[in-house]
Amino acid sequence: MNLKNANILVVDDDTDVLTAVRLLLKMEAKEVVTEKNPENIRSILSKRSFDIILLDMNFKSSINTGNEGIYWLKKIKESATSASVIMITAYGDIDLAVRSLKEGASDFIIKPWHNEKLISTIKELLKGKEGNKEEGKISTEGKKFNDLIGESEVVKDIFFKVEKIAPTDANILILGENGTGKDLIAKAIHKLSLRAKKPYVKVDVGALTESLFESELFGYKKGAFTGANEERAGRFETANGGTLFLDEIGNISLHQQAKLLSVLQNRQINKLGSNEMINIDIRLICATNVSLAELANETRFRKDLIYRINTVEVMMPPLRKRNGDILKLANHFLKIYSEKYMKSQSVLDGKAIEKLNNYVFPGNVRELQYVIERAVIMADNRELSAADIIFSPIEKNEAVPATNENDQLNLEVLEKNTILKVIDKHNGNISKAAKELGLTRTSLYRRLNKYDI
Image (cartoon, rainbow, N blue to C red; front, side, top):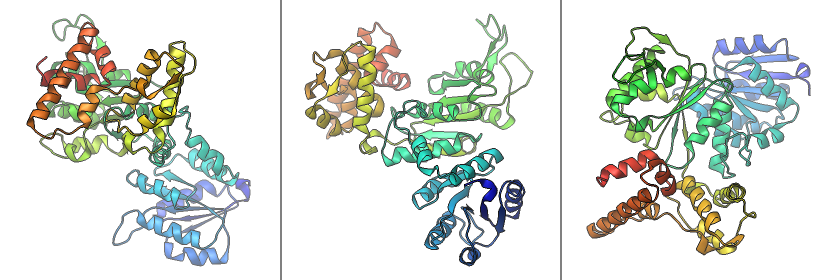
């Protein structure tokens, strides 16, 4: 159906929103009807039909939770209308908006929206592309999501959310355990954003010492300190116009947090050794394996900084909660590493599949990736058996709770010895050792400090 022939109903108790949508669509659609009071929806629908209904998630009521929109969505569906419903939501209601898709909504848009995006969303629905559009969103081949592979419901929800928040400039906080793929989500958000053609810069801020933090992020002038033999741009300046991804944000000190907060508030940096303020224009994405509850402890993390970096949060689930994704991911990695090591396409036999599915994967997707890589390298046959699937001893130690003090000591000795062997194998190269152990460099450094290595 052509937009020129469409009848559209807009329901929102904000008169400014109603006016903006009416002005935008009155020249595009056949008719645009606006309504402030959702109580009148059923009466309106009983008298006439619409092709599209734009419905707000929040209405001014005694309890403004976003559930009002879900309630009225259900009422619209009960009316047997054939109209497609697009939910209008704010950043904070995105999880509810995703839920609305399961309740029958066709799509949702985030306020403030881009006019072109709203019009294209309506046109797609009118052309009956809901099925094709959903297939595009839930791409199991990872083309749109930087190899974030999965078909579980929790992953599909993330795909929906990412596609909605990516075109905005909202600051994103990605939460999740180590190895869940938080960096893949950050790259996908940049790739699908309006800044996609601009720089994408990643910094592991948790690994930066106090002395390196400012020079790395903000840059320095020549002569600013001993060894500063030339001027250098910091990561903020390098990312200007694009996206800055700060990984391990939960591990920075309160002093570093204060420096970062000042830059985010003022949108300006000044290099070490300079008094000149430089304007910056970046989209900020942060990630941490620290829970939001732990971050809310002000002895550890400033609440005002949390609000700055957490306009929208994305929770990456652990692999053990992604029902059905283990085998799909394993086959993905089998293809990658069979090609990389120039072997015939490896496959898993029934016992190997059973072994993978029965393991909890404390190291998450990263651990699965390295398990498959090792299996492909070491296996003599194209078909991998259960014996070829060998899990990391470090991750197994973390996954098994110690029953008494002696057990804990034995586990720590085993972990320390394993770390020493792997580091020695790679002649002290921490990056290579961390990769083989299935850890981030930061996690390995923490263990080195713990065992005084």
